[in-house]
Length: 462
Image 1 (cartoon, rainbow, N blue to C red):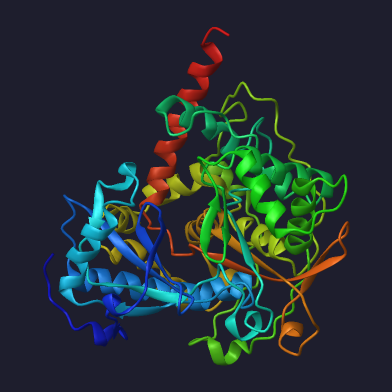
Image 2 (cartoon, rainbow, N blue to C red):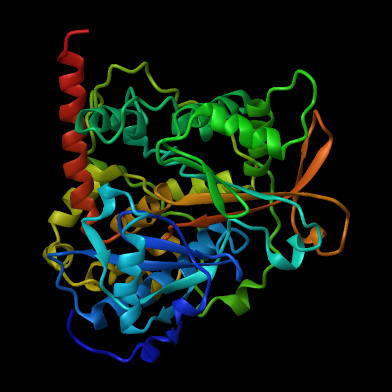
């Protein structure tokens, strides 16, 4: 790691982790998450492979760009009530090696090809909890369901396919060993707006969570991939009020559907929270000439042995998180094939997508900011925003409502009908970092791998 730089130049503040009680929360492909239970905060630290030769200044620029993108673009598109930006921190050098040693015993082996090598990161509120100013008045358990809903809205050219991207990718995951059984979940059910299909989607996640569902109680993981359905039954028995003959999975599904489809008012003053006046006003009008010029996925791609997915959907309630996610995903109007061909036809974009610079691959974010509103964006920029939203996670935190205090009224409520118990809830969208420009090429490569896996599965003897 080279290229020493002053972290304070990027607004980072020094943070000494050893002075705090911390726990390993988990990790994705790019970051390790650590929770601070006493402060109810979360730290995200970027990790790197042994062959990465990134300069510090480039990483700080990328992290700064991430925060700008989330604070302005994502906050406008998804709504300030669902987005909570983080801030930058700087750790002393000796804490990185200390962390690598401490984390080695809790990290999964499949993730250890990358480790911490940079002294900076991000800190934000821990959204596995209801905000402390509200929750501390109740003193009861906080339960958080993390959902990675994936792509439920497709461009017109891809809505004619037999199966959705998520269901087709299951063939690839089975073939490469990243999952042992096909997920029963289909994102199209979740975004259908039809209550029975949405409940079915959630129950499917309970049965086959993979990396799409995790449940936390007071910040501690209690259910997810590798857990049994009996583990979930025990968690729900301890949390929800038992009533004779009731189905706990049905009750939790109904609570989640209520939360996901409930209009949440914006109580934030976005003019004071946004450093620039960037506005979300939808996508430009669909131009059929773009599809004709740059192409689209063939109707027979990808093939799958799975029964056809149901692309029919009803209108989602305006103002609910699912409506915001659907609108954001629909910004991609042309699909990856057309966008890839557009990218490859522009030499400047090709060069930018091939750079190994940590910040240059997301420099397009600054171009988005200059255009002031979403309707002025190019199909490539809109695709990248949509791709970010497709891969984001929702943290839906519940806490039983004990009294109608002034603080509790700041959050919406849902009701468990069998027990007549009311819960306050808060939904936060996370993992909203801008996708690198190079992801367009990666998505094309992934589609080819999915198609190959689907064809091999179709030809395999039953």
